[in-house]
Image (cartoon, rainbow, N blue to C red; front, side, top):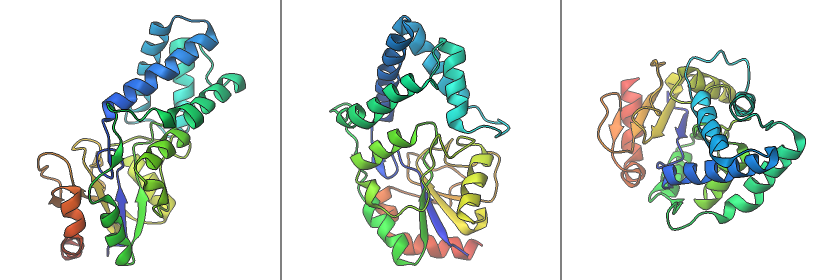
Length: 244
């Protein structure tokens, strides 16, 4: 029985040039770290990129939060201690006060057409909603993007972040830990996402995905745009139930 719908954020509920956003964030934060650690910027930027790659590797044991994994990877790859209180305060100030001003004509983040209608349609059926965005960013950074798209006003029961997650997409362990936090099983949840690699658990764990990206992955139980998903959610929900 369908009890909840979980949404991806970037290019699902939020229309954004994600690559441009990641490049901008990495460049800005690497520059701050280089200044704080009296290092050259380019090696620190390269180390920042390696830390992101390590964070997104599948198969980690889950003993540490993503925040801890990333902080340790930054220190190992750049010799800058991100967990140092002074450096932490500097990065938190940037993400809280400066990052919100960085939504320019290249990043152009805004709510995806149909996003609000889709969430309202889910809630109208008495279902729960959560935001399962890839937790390779801090809570502050994710909250910033949510505000850019007006998603911060939506009643998500859970938003996954670096601080509250121990795995990343598409690792099935990420989906299991997120659904466990909601008290739900994969068979009770529909995932909605646009990424053919990240929004389908690997390996499969019984979670079904409605796909709103380009193409038509075989594993998707429904494909179309977010606006089409919003318009036909009753049909999607009925299809989910009949396939159960």
